[in-house]
Length: 272
Image 1 (cartoon, rainbow, N blue to C red):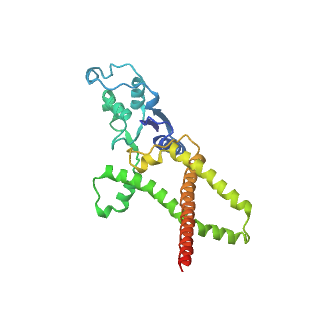
Image 2: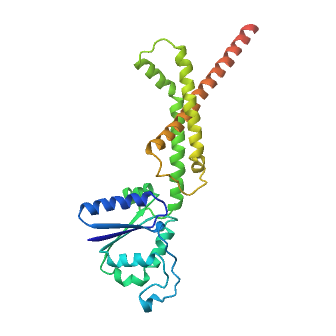
Image 3: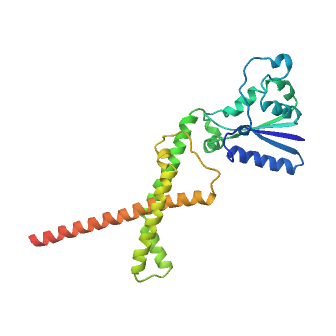
């Protein structure tokens, strides 16, 4: 079978591209011929609504859609892939569908598949798992809540780990049998922690974490061209930054409280 995939995502190497590539891999393994067209790489103008194609069977516009329309007519299976923008398809995909008007009758009898790269997969999963609750509506609010809660949860989890970091340090010291304090460790570990925390602060700024936490945007933007290792490195560094803030902040408060209580005890003894 001759399979034609039309990708309406403006983003290269995004979720829609990944879905298309997986579809292509499976179709080729099954012995089918597959071609992918990315609308972002083609010059496709919006429909003029002149309806000249009703009389001639061809569009009056001379752009890349002329070749694409012929490929649509020749294919046996048509696959449309699009991200979800404002709970609908991308503008590129909508223009493409409008421009199918001259060959609309040729689509009858063809197999068609639609792949939607949803940014709210977690919400849809909840609607599937909890179908018995009959959840409807509130998708926009749920998406914003999901985005804010996930980022706040990341920060609060790291701060919580920092408050209990002394316990992990004690366990590590016991496991490594470090019974005596070391001046080198006392200097090296805080310096290393401070360096990682500084890198984590730059990562926090670069990745606009506060923008998502304060819900100043509707969507989370990810760079799918960056190395996966760099993504995890940045988030681990940000986590270490919040852990260090909580851990050393608690130690400073503890030292200050200890000095204050010691000073009060001396004053009381003086009065006695």
